[in-house]
Length: 171
Image (tube, rainbow, N blue to C red; front, side):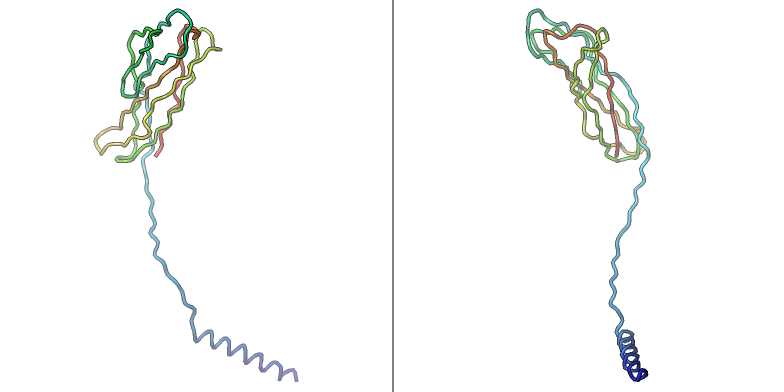
C-alpha cells in the first residue's frame, strides 16, 4: 500500500517538474548607465582682508546706523551720526579646482570683538556670492570677494573690532 501512495506523489512531482522544465521562467533585462565624475581637490587661499576703515561716532543718543561694503566694493556710510574715513576694501579669496565646475561658497556672519573690551561685540553681516564657476584650462582659479555691514549706535564702545571669516567652498 505504501508504494501505491508514493507512486502518484512521485508522478505528480515528476509532472510538475516536467511542466516547469517545458515552460521556462520569463526574465527581464534593463540597461542602466553608470557614471563616475572625478574632480580635483579644491584649494582656497586668502588674498586680502576686509577693512571698513575708521568710523567716528557722532554725539548724542541715536539708534542703528549701518556701515558696509558690498562684495563688489561699494562702500556705504550715509548716516549723519557717522563720519567714515580711511581706506576700505573687500575681502578677496582665490579658489581653484576642476575646470568649468560650479563651486558653492558658504560664509556665515562674523562676530567682531572689541580688542579693548572682549565683552563688546558687533555682528558683521556677510555679503557673499552663493557660487562661482571655475574657468577653462589655462587660468589658475577664480577670485571672489566678500563684503559685509555692521550696525552701530551711540552706545557702541570705541576700539578696534576684529573677527575671522569662516569661508567654506565645495562642489
